[in-house]
Amino acid sequence: MKKLFLLITAFIISMTIYGQQRWTVSHQKIVILKNVEEDPEGNTIELSKSSLSLNGNLTFTFKINDGTVNRTLMVDDSSRAGIKSWENIKKTTSISNAELKKLFSGRTKLLFYFTEIPKDPAKAAVVRMRPLHLCTLVIK
Image 1 (cartoon, rainbow, N blue to C red):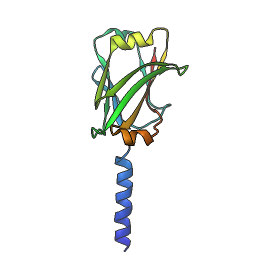
Image 2: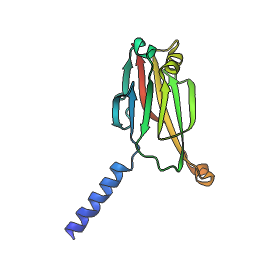
Image 3: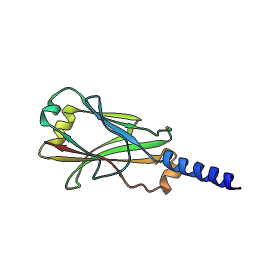
Image 4: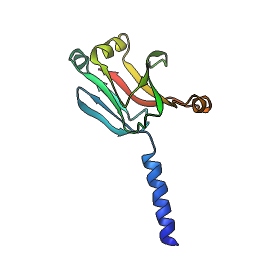
């Protein structure tokens, strides 16, 4: 009985850990944040202005993607005014440095969020999702 209880507990804990959304953030093909969870204070990336002048991308790779959701990526500035959003993004999404440079014009901080809703319209109508914080980019 004790072994069965421990087995069930281990199963529940593993499902909880692996069932959460995780993502990786890389810039210029260098992984900056790996297997992160939502942490607005800890998921901060500092970029230099010179790194945005080079060719390259900021890449978000989502670890869990079963193809049954529509994912939206959004970017805000520190005043929480929506700047831009990308609809129906896939498992990996890249934003070029040139586009980041345009987004940073007049700003020093960009906050990236995402939401996921089911593709089934009946399920999507009853689901309410808050945006999850991916990372905060700060320009030096």
